[in-house]
Length: 246
Ligand code: HEM
Image (cartoon, rainbow, N blue to C red):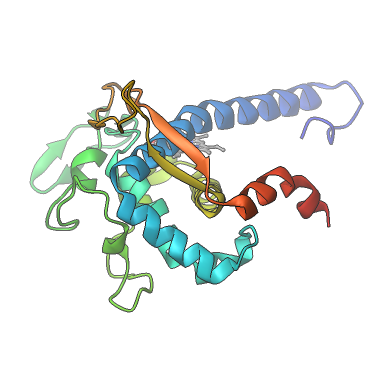
């Protein structure tokens, strides 16, 4: 953005540079910890729900037939898309979103909200409403699919509902996040198995899912093992850069 600005020194150019710097900083601040926490939650879910992992890998193997995934595969990988939705819902990274202020007096369900009131949207409760998402504390991507395995548009999408905040200041990284999670989850599960870590006696540790509390919430550290699924998977990982350049 800055490279595209004119070389001539002027107050307009300075303002445009300031705006470009601020836009980059806002993207970095808004997008880094949120993405990291959601990816950690995904690894946690893979350790706790091996049957979900297996199902995703079956879909990937059927569609990819031994190659790495691409964005063009999205239509054919509804289970991975459902995992993105479930990962944004299950252990929500911003449980109370970001506080907003009413710019005008308002009324909601008979409650008068004076101008200037700080309003906090309880995204956590919305995304764990058992009437909308049955067994809300379980990681169940299937809830977003029809019996035929297609995406079920009748189930509210956590991304539009609450995971990215509300109203005019809603997260501007939403679509970038949903796409990057899709390609990340698909790549990881195409080539790796994720399992709980091992204790000293060689047994898998029992992981108790726990989240930190705060404005942003992260999974507490847990031990996990990440291993290539096969020799072919190892080959794909080691040569992925070369394969991409082909
Ligand atoms: C898992 C990923 C993410 C989650 C859960 C998330 C969630 C949120 C939430 C809850 C808000 C507050 C919205 C509100 O005020 O109601 C927000 C704002 C924002 N997010 Fe994200 N975000 C994510 C990723 C990203 C990424 C990747 C970027 C940038 C590339 C980004 C940039 C921003 C910015 C700039 C704002 C402030 C928008 C404004 O105040 O106008 N976010 N995000």
